[in-house]
Image (cartoon, rainbow, N blue to C red; front, side, top):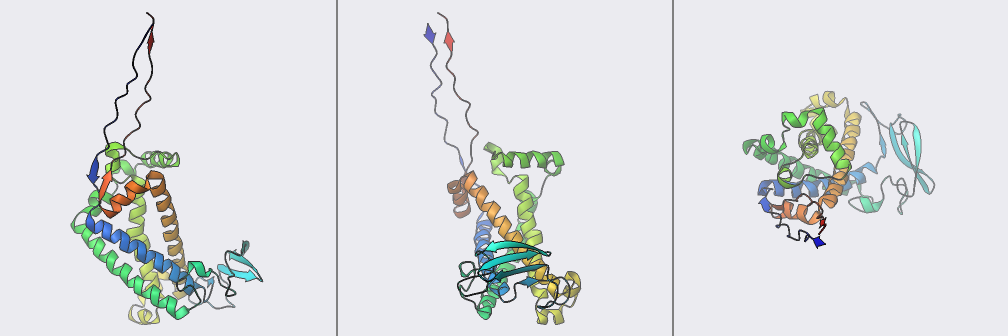
Length: 283
């Protein structure tokens, strides 16, 4: 009886490639920090009046589409007239009635003026950095070359295949991992071209000074209260993007992904080698 030896050759180490350029890395971290501060300071501002309306006006006796409040020690969220229990997570805090607890807000104590100062400062940081990045992305062709979807990627069958692969936690490997996949492109384009411009313009619409200078903003958003609601929904969009983004980083390999966003260098993940088999021949 003769046995063939299993193939014990080791796979070559996956190559390192320079994937993320310096301007992209700088903008990523400025953008990430700014959005985190704006989300937390925005929740502090929201605590001053935890209700949202559509239209020009909004006050305690108007009909809101969203309310975060409490019944004694138990919080609730009322969405479109449907009340959902929130326990002690939302609607109450150690300071009393607060939509969002101190752990999630900047400042951590109730301070409307302080929350606005943090929010407005980092709103300018976000607006300036986003404008500079968009100019860089256009001039360097990063937007067209790396983020624009190809015709093949826009086909519904291609997108559906990519969705199924992500649902099965099968991420691109080899040369395919050099480029953003279609779902990444769609997410990044939505943030750059839709979420950031909308959150900035809706924020400006809530300013009486900007209403006087640019009255067309009120027409664009349908009133200051509608702008406040849209601003809040954009914030939810950012929060959802961050949650999915962090989950994908953890699943794809946090060390490799972080190295790419800090140094620019990324190790191409390789396809799994097929399992070796033992063959047996009759003597």
